[in-house]
Length: 277
Ligand code: SAH
Image 1: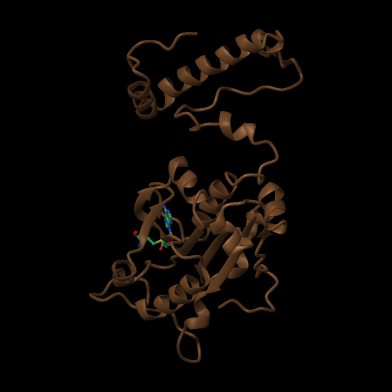
Image 2: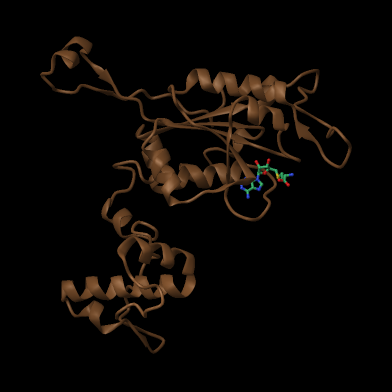
């Protein structure tokens, strides 16, 4: 468990809300306690949290209790005078592997603290690639327990024993899971209602409809001889909307043929046809 004196440890804020309803079942239950979305991070570097998540909108939402962050220091479960958490790989080879028995203790503590049904995830380059659909699914749930690996990773038995889901940020290797966990948490908590000031920006941004976002511009109207596309300054809302949609389609077709084919299949379009501008 994390040290209660540790300033990086966040208060568990159970947000209380009273639902007004007249159904007998609700009357029987009386007050309904709503729990905020909670991230439980198992890590050797709890001091790396909240990191960038403590800034800007995610930081404000954390302070307001719209979501919670709990770090679980793996070192607390280590053994011996140096609280050892790892050992050499069976079969030889370089590096160190995190021990299953030590990890199991941290996982059990986190699971006992988290809401029932909270998914258990290991950030790992072998995992399924994280995407916006998964961020949406996680945001709709009670939170996530995230295991950050270090060195050569975890003893594989712990993954099967706890039925851990492996999630990757992409086809590259990080030194540890902490940055990946922060990326996953960031992408997820910004989808929780009221975390972003402007909910409309979620509806229009990249991936929201299976397309990349259209280009954005701001003042000055002409910069270094480059003008903002005229339609955006026309004040004609319908034309702006259709221009943005067409640009999103063109950009997606050019840069992400995989997304474009999926979008066309969903909307009954021919992916080889030029998107209309
Ligand atoms: N030996 C492992 C890599 C270990 S890297 C392998 O080859 O698969 C150390 C830790 O960094 C991992 O345990 C994992 O938690 C994290 N990590 C590395 N790359 C990652 C990625 N692409 N996505 C998510 N986590 C990653």
